[in-house]
Length: 524
Image 1 (tube, rainbow, N blue to C red):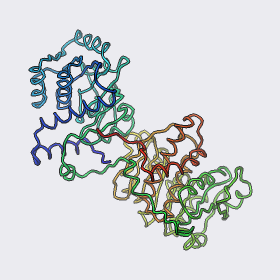
Image 2 (tube, one colour):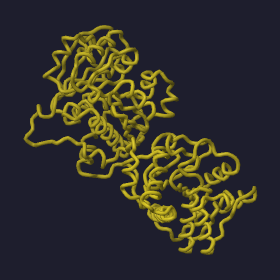
Image 3 (tube, rainbow, N blue to C red):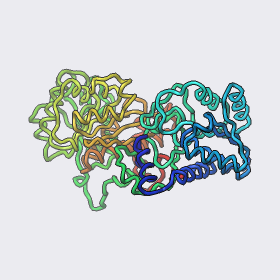
Image 4 (spheres, helix red, strand yellow):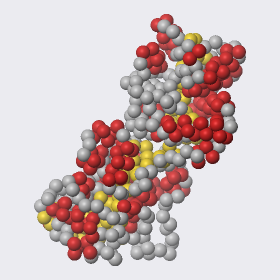
């Protein structure tokens, strides 16, 4: 599903109005009606419900006035509060204000402290408050009187609904003002805005529904976008074929180079992901001194191979890597490598000598940050950093990465062409061309050691099956999130383990192949 920035949405609207010839009032009417239909679905019907609508002076306020008119026409209890004087409203919003008044409803034009109290009383007797104060053009802080209005709207035990974006949320970045409308439901218009799926905006948006307001395909085609939301529909087409006449060689051989004296189990968790990726063969490579002292069992499906050791970890040499060609189809390197000095040399040997698909995770990324070399095959080099590792790779504070994960990913890919998987509550997957895919399926149950090891093995196994780096990364990230969601639903976020998430990957595959719903915003 396409995601848009505020500027892209403005350009799409302008094309629809100026080039296609759809009047702005028609788009506003469509928006209001679709919000109304979505409310009816999400509230279990409108009959018996009482509403308060808070309107601003722009087109977002005009959308709210359309909703108000239709609620009024259906004889539903309603209060409408205008936060700005009528003369400050946009032309289309003023038109809808006049229509509402002629229809018999008189909004309250707020001006002072007594109107704030009237709002508080109206909310006390309402089932739902609709935020139509600020739209996609908002940035910065809500100040003064409007800030008091939003603060009051956040009080009380009633359903909070935002039109397009919650007031105080920046549509492009997901940044939020100190006082931001806290929606249970956001009905976003035309196309979903990227800020609704980036933190902290995602928390303020609640459940997101996308309303089709009648924008024709040429308007979207005229304005290219660099952001896509990772949904089941997007990912289902990426699944590799699984012919029944295939054999183990058909489905690829992945080598996982993982583990050290300090982190013995990292490679084992990676093999869980690779085994459940569909790869035909999985080999776990370990330093010689580690292989005989493992604190956990290796599944019998896994081939074990040992390599030279130094500083308690890998000491790979060019001859080792040259021997990989013709045997393996993809490599995973880095889980549990530790901090020994030899890891940098091992990474350099891999980057210079291995021509195929390569997933770098964990300590291999730290070695890369310390000065590792480049790989010429950007399309099949997959890096999977979390925020801390991304901070080291870019040399910037973690807070700066959190504030703009998409920008950080784009900056890094420009420096080091690759497929980047920036792991966080909203994971950003970016190919060498700079197009960003967002997997916005946060899960506190995955916030534990080993989740990244499982993901790296899963991506490596998909890469070994002949999927390109971007395709393998997108599919791996989605399946990992889906298995995590199943574990959370059945086991709870507190006690679920990464081993259990691995055991649920087959069900995640089945859901995807069978077309079951799996997250993402609903369409109104």
